[in-house]
Length: 532
Ligand code: SF4
Image (cartoon, rainbow, N blue to C red; front, side, top):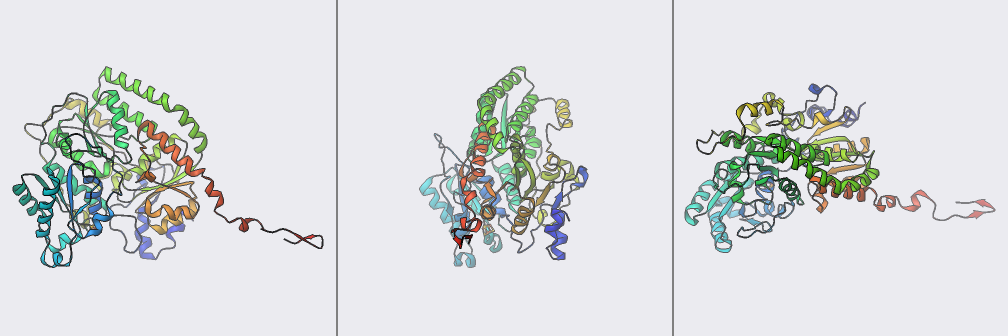
């Protein structure tokens, strides 16, 4: 029996039938690595997934520092999302920063019975009086959709009354099947109401947006630092440490760099259609990943000076970290890892682990779609089900005034053919035959796979970290970075290696078994013979 069969064997026939389509043993034949993804979770199975509200407010909107975000609902949704995702943001002159706050309408029973619109309006009035924000975002939670509060009408009312921008997001937690629906809803509204409105002067023709970078532990800052050293102008970052003004100007860049494909591919595609800005899948996680990414970006801009500068910066950055890399390689080479993260890191971090000689035995996603596993080429074959059809899909047209192309159409076509633009190859192609790819891994499967595959490190989140560690396997969080970071770029690679080396070699692992369980606490003799 294979490892997957041993895990599946313990399910009832109905659950077995469902879960076996979400567990794939990687095969040398690419076409056989098909996986079921972005479908409903089996009730009661202890999934790690979150909800649509978490994907919209928690992931995409949360890091926008100067938009005051009011969570319309009972207090739980707001409280549990308060400060728990480490999207960092610096104070900047003239830009409000609300990242440390959590705003809620704190709905009570009468609001559910009689409707919560009045309370929401009151909350907006109060926020205006206390904070004077220029932008307010309203995020729905589960009851809001069920009782029929019209948050979009309230947003319109607020815009007229207070002369501000107010955007409503109908991201009730039950929509879709995971955080993924929330990403889509946030993308749609940002596209409709924010992107394209700015007219900031862009200084450099080497101008880029960084999409799907949420500045966890300072990742976005490290990425920006490298890009700026080379000479790029970063127009906007979606949405780590971002301001509304930055986002408004995204249409003016000459290239969009997509780090997290899952959460932001809708915006990447729409900016290209409407404003002519192509997108490139990048990976700033890992030394090799970063170098390859920097060279790809230089290839797109095709400028001799820029290409030269790219190589100079790569060489200089490498020189500064090479001793550390070599040292940590001696500590980590030959170890194995299992990764289970949201919708992009399980792929990106395999590149980084590879830099240090760590191989992957299992990787999975909570809420990725099939294209993150198998590559965008399978998109035409993905069947929509009732859950995804419920999420609005908007289409845009080329903007008659703001549409611009940095490269000629033929050159763009060539780069697309080379898969340098508008393409993401997914995770499966880079995994070794015989390893496992698992979608929506639940707690039972986590424990079983860890027992059977025995990885040295399990990378996941807070909910399963201590389950793994109680069984003697180091677990590092790849959502919060265990409150460390940054892990992106050159310096981030060293931080990452330092953290997992400390974890693996921590002396505590050798104290797990009480001494009296491995050796007698008393020894003595009786009548000249060893008694115990
Ligand atoms: S599922 Fe509903 S109640 Fe739970 S956090 Fe999401 S929006 Fe809030």
